[in-house]
Length: 88
Image (cartoon, rainbow, N blue to C red; front, side, top):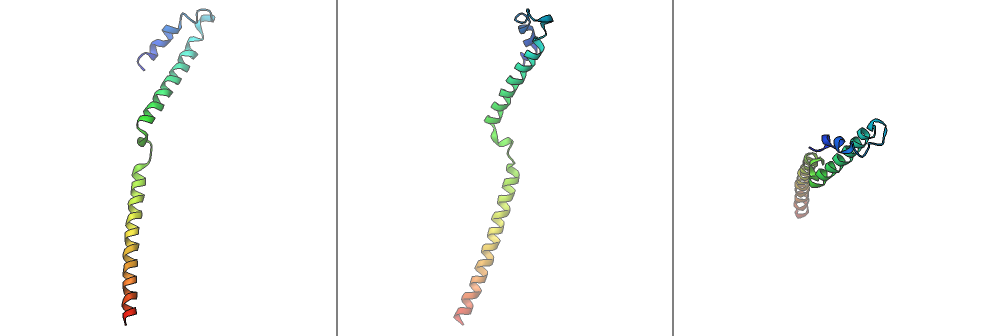
């Protein structure tokens, strides 16, 4: 990214044939856009979990686990009562 501001100077000579070197600015902008886009893709691939809502997913998983524990306790409590009724 440090050399992107100097890129128009490097493109000045190849665009000598165009009127007033008008192709330098759009070409430099396009190259900057493409290179910075590739850089952003590389960062995303290196750290994919920074863009995922992991905190929300972990919270939902914790709530489901708590609900499962509550349901299991209720189920064990109701089956315990049924077995007491069967003994009578």
